[in-house]
Amino acid sequence: MELVPLQISISAVKHKKTYPKRHNWLDKADIELLLAQPPQTKIGVRDRFIILFLFSTGARLAEMRSVQLKDVIINEKYPYIRITGKGNKPHIVPIPEDSFLKNYKYYCHLYHPKENPDDYLFYPTAKGGREMMSEDNVQRILKKYGDAARCSNPKLPSIHPHLLRHSYGAQLYRLGVSLPEIAKLLGHEDISTTEIYAETDPEMAAEAISKMLGKQPVRKWDFLTEDEKLKILGLK
Image 1 (cartoon, rainbow, N blue to C red):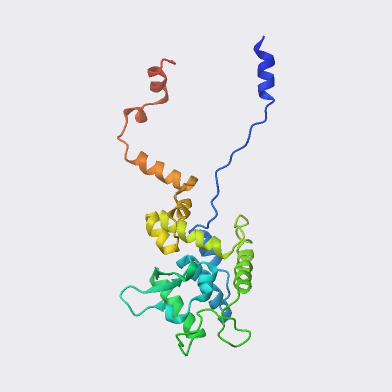
Image 2: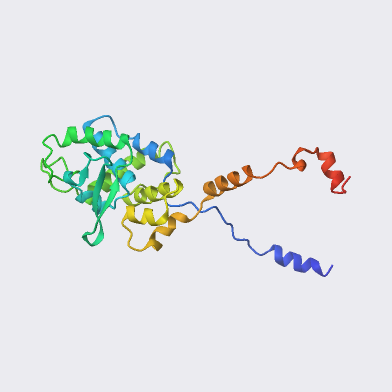
């Protein structure tokens, strides 16, 4: 009976609830949903390519805005984009796949027919010039399509340029790219900044466990009936 008061006092202690950590990045399905939002118009083509560019290169907003046509090198065996990062330091990002290149060429067909190498890749269309697109305009575009995508997936977080950068780094890590390589592609001077991508989430943990269990030898225990298992354990 002396344990009853102790048990009551322990049961009154509030337990802290813990939930799986949701990382601040988008998965493939989220990105595909986001890319499906812009309409099939000239402006829609531009907006979709802005989203694709940020996700496919991991560029910071300022880096994306400063890219000029001459920074996109496509007539090489391995096409790449020259990104100018913090401290005016350039780094190279490979053009990821054929679909990106096709989107780039179609975008340029609509927005850069004269192919002036000094033109900014992205520019505001309202004024008719070729000056650098503003930060507010890019953020407005991402928010607009993020809000539209959220109608289909209410769990989708607020969309902003740095979220797409994080998503790029996370996808590289999931594909097996090493942290030093990711650091170079993202223009990180300190690899400790890149280590956030090494944190596992529930999906990655489940995949790892599944692979591990798949390599385990077959056990006789797995083929026993419930009665046989109870007998072995002395419970029947």
